Length: 325
Image (cartoon, rainbow, N blue to C red; front, side):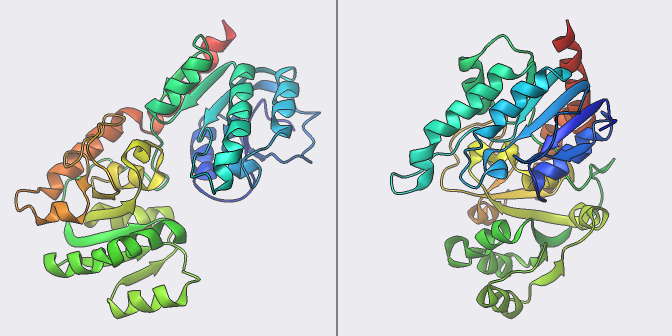
């Protein structure tokens, strides 16, 4: 490998890869998919950046081999940084995450101890990391939009609600409260626009057709950006205390599209996000005649701007410099 710096990512496509590509290009750190069989022995350079998501590297989120690999990379690069996209899973006692999260914690801790600098995408993740090791150079920045950051968000908005993302994420929106999106859209005169790969679930596909959802399929980033720039709303299912790590939420926010966040609980402030200020708290919020979608979209964009792409790149450059001191 001739590159002086490298971004190591889990194999496959998805939000982590998109994020790593956007960050890696201006840092001149090309992507390398890292698996247990990847030969990294000949790699040398200025810095290595590991994009860590346990389930991306191993199906149960326990890539024990990764710790040894990062330990080796420390002797091959001047500095090694970790972008913690995830730390560890939690769940009920009948799920595998409950029984494995101790191992996952151990791996996250070991990677932290080996890192010269790190980046986290949510305050609660950073708090946990700081409890393990406080002195390492670090930053806390929510994720960026993978479909662009328009220079301006002003302009007319059409009565549309966009549902964007992977099939799994979009299906959650349509199934929320037994299809509340369809009833809400009808009450408020909203057209539903679906953007993303097709569904394997034929029944769900049939429901969307019956409800006259405009299905765009998977679109290039610039076409997604154009669609978001003219839509009043964008819907997603995500816990409020994890919204800062959602690429979908970032996409809506960067475009000034009012996010409709669907979750069980809205009463906490997380990562600077407030309900009905930076996002609409469920479809119920649309029943309030005082709700101003464009004002919320502007607030969401204002929240997003300090941690956009340029800010992320500048932060990592600063961290790399700090790690060399």
